[in-house]
Every structure is written in C-alpha cells, then in structure tokens.
Length: 159
Ligand code: HEM
Image (tube, rainbow, N blue to C red):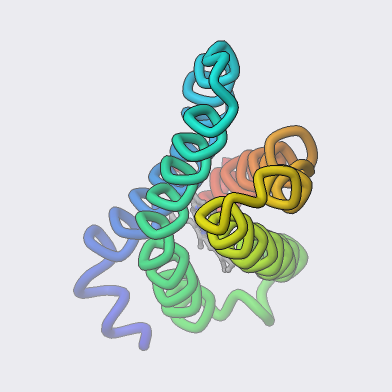
C-alpha cells in the first residue's frame, strides 16, 4: 500500500480532493444558490417538482465521489500508517466525519426518493413534509462536517 501511495500519490490526493469539492461544493451550490431561487416560484407543483429533481441529480452525482473519497482515504491511512502515528486522532476524526456525512446522505437520499414518489402520486403535502428538514438542517450539517474534514485534511499535511 505504501508503494501504491508512493507511486500514485499525486492522483490519489487529486481524486480525494476532487471528491471533496464535488460533494461539499455541490451541497453549498444547491443550498446557497439554487434552493433560495427556486423558492421564488409561486406554482407549488413546479416549485416542489423542480426542487426534488435538482436535489435528486445532485445526490446521484455525488454518490461515486463518496466512494472515491473513502477508497483514497483508506489508501492514505494505510500507507501513512495513520492509525498508529502521531496524527491518528485526526485520521480517526476524519473517518468518523465521513461516516456521519454518509449516513446523513443516505437518509436524505431515501427521504428525497420517497418524496418524489409522493409528488408523482399528487400527494404534495406528504412530499413536502418528507424533505422539510433537508435544506435547513441536514444539508447544513453535511456542509459544516465537510468543511471540518477539509480543515483536518490540511492538518494532515503537517501545517
Ligand atoms: C474517511 C476518512 C478520511 C481520511 C483518512 C482522510 C485522509 C486525508 C489525508 C491523509 C489527507 C492529506 C493528503 C496530503 O498528503 O496532502 C487528506 C486531505 C484532504 N481531505 Fe481527507 N480524509 C478523509 C475524509 C475526507 C472527507 C470526508 C473530506 C471532505 C468531504 C476530505 C477532504 C479532504 C481535502 C479537501 C483534503 C486536502 C487538504 C489539502 O489541500 O491540504 N477528507 N485527507
């Protein structure tokens, strides 16, 4: 594994950081730019349907990147002996952050999928209530955790 990291460190760190900015950046863009603009639409079905579709696309986009972050993270953790060196607290913190972010993501993914089915059945009230915590609680939690993971990533570089 050390040999693998030694030979491919550039691409491994590149993929890790690429995954982070697609995942965290995607959530920030949806939360800060897309969602508030959609709320200005007055027609409820159009507003709800468009919000659900955009969120669904983001969730599908980030899925492979969540896996890429984990695979590259594990390669680095093993290669750098991250669970036994002086930085082990940071390695473990990042692993915990990744796990919480992924569980939160899975929860949001399932809620959105159920909401979209309710929306297609014409049950707008149920659809709305299924996703009501996503923009104001669940997405901000993952944005904050992703930002902390970025901060800790820089600490792992030794700065
Ligand atoms: C699963 C646990 C994780 C481990 C073990 C881990 C490990 C690492 C390591 C070793 C580095 C330093 C790479 C270098 O040598 O420059 C790093 C950097 C980084 N990590 Fe993670 N990581 C994990 C999860 C995450 C998550 C969840 C995110 C964000 C969503 C993230 C974002 C970053 C970023 C942006 C950097 C680059 C920081 C810089 O430019 O210096 N990491 N990570």
